[in-house]
Image (cartoon, rainbow, N blue to C red; front, side, top):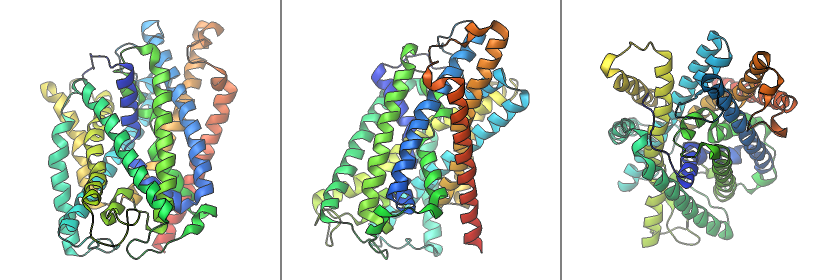
Length: 454
């Protein structure tokens, strides 16, 4: 894939980390927080934030060691040291193939979730304009709901596809703008939710108010909680693409830490506050709940919307759509890069670039036509995303150190990103913890799937 030549500033670099981090996963956190109960949700989110910071540093260390093996310098250059290249450098050919397959599957799942979220949001707004806001709120849709959903998928495709063909190097200002846009919109969302919280939880549709969730440990929904949080936090496989445009490569560690911390704080606030207000009414994405926003009696009171109520209602409803319009090209770029690395150089000829991007762009729309449940997509994505983003970085850094030391002696262990949290003992402990969490979450998800089928 084409390299990005223009380096981003420090602030813009943090912005692109935030943009890669905050996808549609954040909008499913209130639903997952309520499903798991507040105590378990807060503990697991904090653990995941810590693991994200640690494994992100492992990823960067593996990137720099790969760079040094190719260029004899651990200062990152303009090459994209993605997971496929890293695994190919330090593992077997089979390991490279496995990594490529997982990355491609995960990114297709991300894009699948984006299309489903955007299409469901457009459909909600359509029925809201028709003064039938609860038309498709039930689990069983009628023919009108199905037709409106497919039309919205087509409309969303028209909006999204052209953006995927724009080179990321031309999006520096856009990435910075989108970072500020997200912060502003999340601020509006959190302010309106906090105001409503002082007035008490709300009952939307046919759901009841359930305040007991704040003291409950819902271990039976551990799989739902874990996979949704995994989708929200999974940044590591995208780090090579996110950090490649950074102008000053010495700042990649600081940029990653600041961007991840900002994203983590937003996740905790959105998940806890929104779930406290909506309780059993929490949807995925949570922004759909704003179809009931009126601006009265705390915000979600009964009555016709005020002028401010209308503005806030539609600003929040279109937030995921605007968010995805920016996020979709970023993930498509990562996916296309990995598809390109697995194909022969001769494939596609002069049309190679556009053929590969097309392979990344269009399949998620077909998948969204088959399955449009964001909850189901998030559960499937979370299982694979966690393995790729948390288990693989540990394996990469251990393999790169072992081979480097075997070839060049103990001095090769030194690296700018080698610290107390990345000693071999700590890496092995993190690897074991991540592996156990992956097995437990997969077990719970499969149990819930089989339970729903019986």
